[in-house]
Length: 235
Image 1 (cartoon, rainbow, N blue to C red):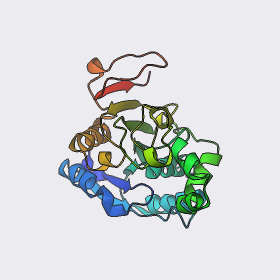
Image 2: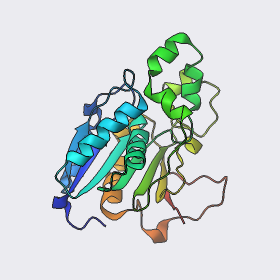
Image 3: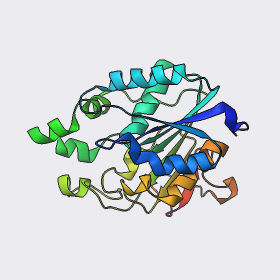
C-alpha cells in the first residue's frame, strides 16, 4: 500500500497518436486521491522504443519523490514497462497498463501491411512488436485494465480481428506474465481514458495494489474470460 501519498508521484503516459493531455481526466481522479501527477509526452512516430524508454527513465530518475507509480494508456503502458525493466528504475513501485498491447497487436500488424500504415505507426510500435518482451522486475506490481467493447479504429483496419477486443487491442494481447492483477471492463480502447470507472480502478491500484477486494476476485482457468467489471488476481 502507498502509505504516504506525499512521497509518491504518478507519471502518466498517453497512447499512440494522442497528446499527453488525453490523460487529463485520469490525472484529475488521481490527484483527488491525494497523489501528485505529471504527464510525460513522447514522440511515438519520430522516435524509437529505446529513445522513448531512455527519456522516460531520465525523467523518473530526476524526480525528487521517493516512490514513483506510472500509468500508461495503450502504447504508453508498454513504454513504461520497458523503461522500468530495461533501466532498473528502483523508484518505481507500481505500473498500471490500460489497454496496452503487451503480447502483440493484431491491428498494428494489419495496418503495417500498407505503406501508409507503416508511416502512421512510426518507429516505436514496430520496435515493441519485434523486441523480446520484458517482464515486471521484482518489487514492481503491474495492474492491467482491459476493455471489451469492440468499438474503434482497429475494427476498420482489421475487421477480421478475433474477439474479444476493445476496438484496437485484443484481450489476450494485454496480459502480462507476472502481473499483480487484471480487470476486464466493457469500455472501448479510447473510451477507457475517459471512463470514470477506469479512473477509480487506476486510483485503487495505485493506493492498494489491487483493483477489487481479494474476496471478490474470481479464480479462472486458462482460456476463460472474466465477467465485465471483475478482477483476476495473479496467483
